[in-house]
Image (tube, rainbow, N blue to C red; front, side, top):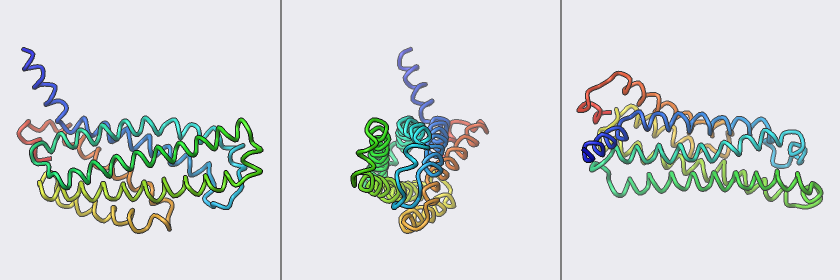
Length: 226
């Protein structure tokens, strides 16, 4: 009886619905956080700290969404790896997992820097206004989130696209589209700020595709072809 329950639980976790729900939650939360940050923090690194007074609530809301987005992304990674099972290639799986974790770590680091700025300004605004702390923190925050974290997202996408091609778990069109979007993240991030929305958009598209397949109620043997 217990063994049957374990097998049933494993089948449930292995279905696309788990990855789909986690991916959709991540895309919504992370995308919302990005929108709030984009409309609240000036794009120009040389801009003054006035936004800390007028838009601190929006930034705080965005930062509160980030941990929950990270939890959903970890679930997304875990279910994807579980679905690969014995087909998982150690090299590409390591790159896939490592880049995903680095993306999360850098995103959290950037969010912590932003949170530090907001809290410091709230308690001692003169420290921000009368020192180079603001300029330094803004520059580091921008680089961590908009360059390093997003480039790790590009590596994550490229490694998963390669896994899809090698295992045949997804149509090649998905893999090639993933390659193209990943290259944009890797090469263009310093020039177009809106490029950062590619990653949550891609996760959302993949997750919705998984969910559609699941809702078609394919038999268990066909689910391995997703």
